[in-house]
Image 1 (cartoon, rainbow, N blue to C red):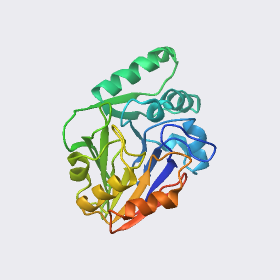
Image 2 (image 1 turned 30 degrees about the horizontal axis):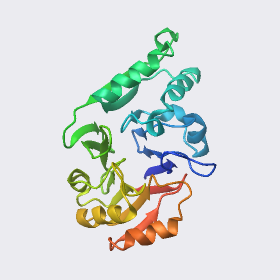
Image 3 (image 1 turned 120 degrees about the horizontal axis):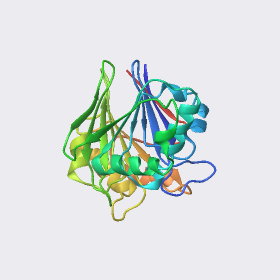
Image 4 (image 1 turned 135 degrees about the horizontal axis):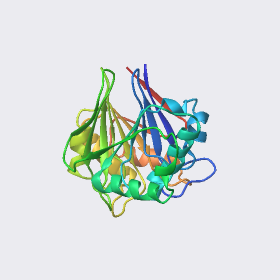
Length: 249
């Protein structure tokens, strides 16, 4: 059984109960971390996930609340004795900035450091990132304040879509078309972000079965957020919470 684990669900400002938005996708042959914030090793262990099992890191965009944990993750995996490669996926500019950020820590001098394979994503619709026996992942640009990708994740029988940070746009609807689950940000209406109602509208337009709201302010009344999304979406609405899991075939 494949599993998605929400490691964090808050928007830019976390609190003691909610970390910034990031999650894992665990399958038979891949363990994918989507975005990387806070102290990644601690959060992975709290979720019962072996940090050394992470095979891939997908960075959706270069805002601090999505990328700040990358140096700690890379260093701590090294100190934990990792030997096998880690693949890091991101848009060209995102990868360049990660490399620049790591150079400040002089990571080239870390003796015995494991291989890191940077995969630069083209800014185009439905770019295939991962194609394994158990999971396939595609990326497409969405409508945030800086270049950002959303994701479509397919296993044998289920399709999940993650909007990442975005205002409502046709690209997200296309990415989520016919998906079983849409995980959509609900920061609040504004430039580069979406309200619960707008997330519901995208879910309805895309024909998904279930909507998970994510990347909402830490002090949010989630019952209110769910009710607002339900005014525009006839399917089931759930507010994602830290360490919540979704199992799928």
